[in-house]
Length: 167
Image (tube, rainbow, N blue to C red; front, side, top):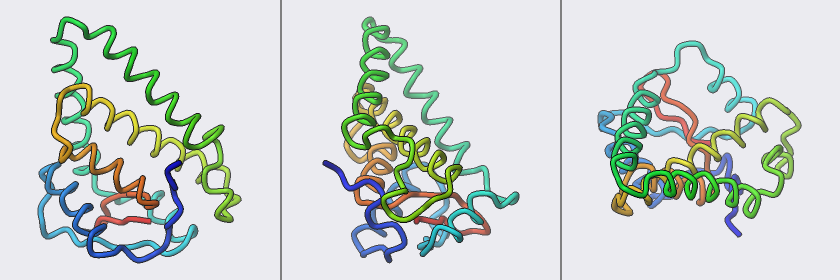
């Protein structure tokens, strides 16, 4: 079983920092973004709700998602592939996270909204990585790398003020 969220707040090891850098580079985000570790739930929440977050990260992921979906829809077996994608994400959430409603509760987070945001972020990462796999993308695809960041126990949060925050 994967240790989703198990290393929240811990400093990124060199290999994890390289993984995050490869993910950002794969999305076409500038290499000068610094990577910052968030150390606690309160800080993570403040960063997530900050009104000045940088949309470039979100926009880059959405462009790539649309690209992969278009590629899948062009295939003969697109309907089956999309059903497989949906079922795979559902199965992953149930198998890896139980009910998937309060993934941070076992780490001491009692904020229901933050728990829902974390569950949604993980579900999105699983969906995107499976989409990349079904589209025939290489294991180095940014969506596969994002899943690996989550699988390592961290949570990619947002770009804010020239920094990419990872909890």
